[in-house]
Amino acid sequence: RRELHTTDDKDLFIEKDAPGLLPLFEGKMIWQYSHVFEKPQYWLDPTAFDARLKSKELHRMAQDLGVPKAEAIKHEEAVRYDREFVRLGLREVAADTNERSLIFSLLPKHCGLGHTLFANAAKNYAPDAVGGVQVQPVSALRLLFAAAWFNSLPSDWLARFMIQIHVSKTHLYRLPLPQPDDDTIRTNPDYAQLAKNALLLSLSASWDDFAELAPLFAIQPTDVPFTAKAKDLLRAENDKTVARLYGISGAEFAHLLRSFKGMASKRPEYLMLLDA
Image 1 (cartoon, rainbow, N blue to C red):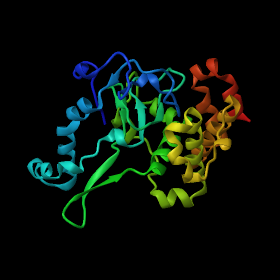
Image 2 (cartoon, helix red, strand yellow):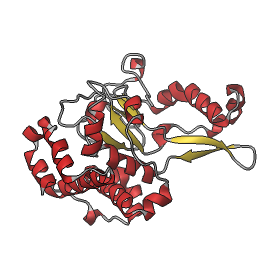
Image 3 (cartoon, rainbow, N blue to C red):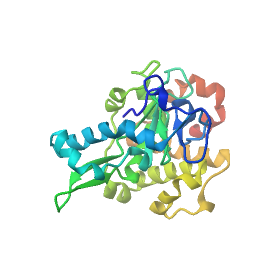
Image 4 (tube, rainbow, N blue to C red):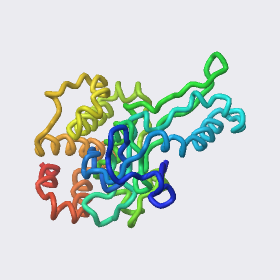
């Protein structure tokens, strides 16, 4: 889902940081598993930001509940904004000749998104037992699993047959991938390892922003990889696991890797690690 547009919502953008303001994230600010690739250029006043999104949130509540918007307005105290949740972000601008085309990262709470950065729908609204409305967040485990799968080289290779300079959700819907629930992720060793590796890589970008997720796999600060080699080993494990789950043979995987010309010139050591 898209949140703000750089032109349409420009009146909300503040060019200098100050206490109480929220950072505006743009696509260029993220890389795979990292939301700190570049620093923000704009900030948002949270009150004005929420006021801009309130009508849209009430519309989403009405859709989730299957009622007219006028009925949903009666439950406006139950509105929760997506910025209150950890989300999975996708860089919208990409190319099939770049080092990587699919670029996903966890996004911290309390940030806004520009139109070059998409994120998952963070929650759903549902009726509760006493006639009110409750919020059901998307589970962090599913976000981590999705981050690992979408950031893998096999997924990137498939996506490059469709994208040219922009990535859309239509492209993502066409990618074949499992959609396990939390219990399946926990009990399937491959799925659990993919999600754990994604969390370790995200924590290496910022422990403070995602520390609340560390208990999912009993991760301690000392477990987090901080050297380039340690992080590459986790990425490589995920790439090989996804390739195996797709049923890709060793020869097919080698053929797939040869198509990443940009990576071959920028990160030949990583391709050598995958061939090991």
